[in-house]
Image 1 (cartoon, rainbow, N blue to C red):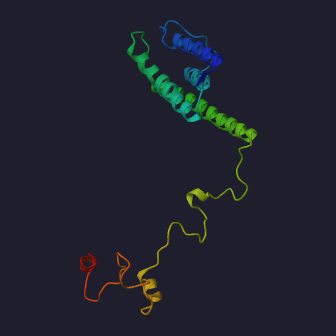
Image 2: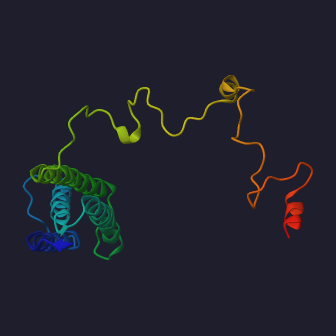
Image 3: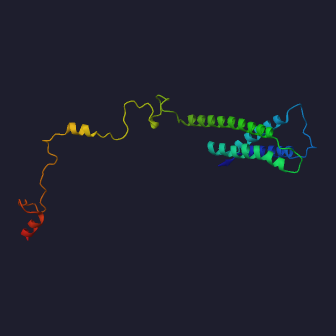
Length: 198
């Protein structure tokens, strides 16, 4: 896992600017250009999530889960709760959370899409392509196999009885082989033949 330093520096700068703006007393005002406070929340969390997503170079799923947890849930929701609890005379606003989460989710969706596309291009450049054939079926999942059967197919009892021949012998011989190579007497058993040999 490698850290991309330009994105880490950009995220640190953005988080400091956002914290200064979000946790400042109400008498400190941000220059306005007839924009909504919610638009600032949306853009701030769009940029925060975008930069955080590209900090770590690791598996796409891990980055997605970590970014969702840290930016969308952690920063997006918790920042408004903390802002309402601190004695800075700022009010808790549900619509700020909606704007934070919306901006974060949009950035997360775009980054995830681009990351997936980037990985597919790397695989294609290395020669890892799909095997030629019908791409809409998945043989490993057993889709569209037709008449192919899976596993061992055992005949039913009726099929076994239909093929059974009463005159066929089941074994080569019906008598057990003697232990010492000599045939057994008709009425005796194996124990008797051992006694006679001694």
